[in-house]
Amino acid sequence: MKLPLLTINAFASEPFTGNPAAVCPLDDWLDDSLLQAIAAQNNIAETAYIVKTGPGNYKIRWFTPAVEVPLCGHATLASAFALNTCLGETAEKITFDSKSGPLHVDCHDELLTLDFPAQPAKPTATPDWFVNAFGANPVEFHKAAYSLAVFPSEKIVAALEPDFSILQKTPNSNVIVTAPSKRYDFISRFFAPASGIDEDPVTGSAHCTLTPYWANRLKKNALRAKQISKRGGEVDCELTGDRVLLSGKAQLYSQAMIHV
Image (cartoon, rainbow, N blue to C red; front, side):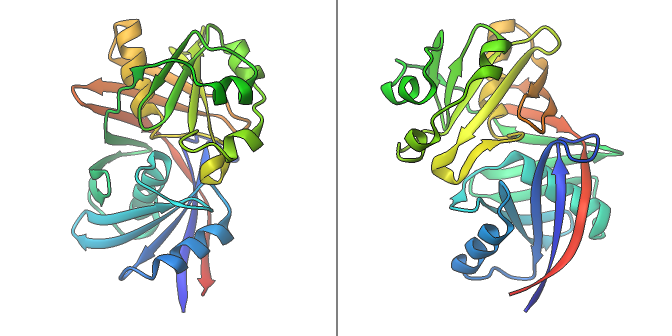
């Protein structure tokens, strides 16, 4: 069986930046074991599978090299870009039916905007596993779908070198680290070794938690953010009620046919 596979750099305005995602359009769902095996072979943060259900409407699922995940921003943005740019979709607004509910992407020229559910975090005590893994104490610690650790400066966040072996064996240890920034409203990094990703380059779903936190702290709903991974990527964020709008660009890296 041959399947098309596109690799898209999401939240990227130039080559070799942003977060790469593989996009695999399907006529019908394949066995989960095969979907996971393809994602493991791709060995990038996420592989998105999409099945068309109507004009501008698709079902979507996301797999890391290790597990299926319930929400992924950059691979959703990549999927919309692939559909509009390479796969003949003409709708300016694409809706994806996912395990996290309906997700919408507006496609206007080079800018794509995700409409995702906000996932505000609640403050909690800093757990021992975080201190042991990072060797640092944040000024605040919060919990939502991901943990959120807040530090006082970008310099501290940039210098963090976590012990991935601790994170790998700790359940629910996917964690965002963040701090204020002089150039941006905030910066962040995201670590998820327990899900097969040591450090994610740019994480759309993490900004579903970052946006409500920083909107409340800075008393503004429109925010400019950067994830300061090695590849790096910029995200325009806006809090609108219980939704988060995340905007960025994408670039096609490759188109291929895989044999499975």
